[in-house]
Image (cartoon, rainbow, N blue to C red; front, top):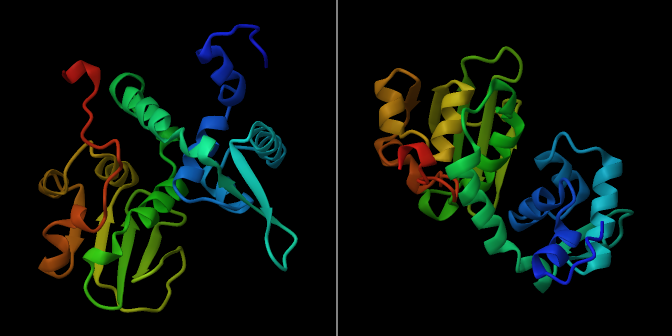
Length: 227
């Protein structure tokens, strides 16, 4: 879309103003490089729309598409131009936390997206040993109520089937509470005191969960109504 204006805001919106575009950039800033990874973080986007948005961003110079060696698919990387959107995405997120979130409806609670973010949030340098296994039991879900994070020094896997490993930390919690914990809308202490969370494991891991399961970069920003 062209706005026919020399204003830099208008010129920027010609590139990033289409629906889904900023969320694609958000996912790429979080480390997604493959089509399937982008789909995982944007579950409602159609393959056709994602393909079109990636092509548009590539043509604009925001991303670079590279063939995966020995495979049929491609990987997508942010260019310097694309990396320059990091403070823009952060500011939009800050604004959203303060002004746009309101009351989160049940349809906004996305289990797979939450688990993806939790997977990305594990700081393996703060964990002891070669491997740490975390199990989540979502008390309000009938399907896919059990999930595991398997954290090693250089990677973290997320599983919805039992990996058959000794569990170090157990979370028993409902989906809304776990979302609020990661978003920083409540604390582990408050959730446990209210009976919304049961956390079992070694004190070294349960005493300060946020040190190794890092909350959202937007955590701590109060809504405008609380200021």
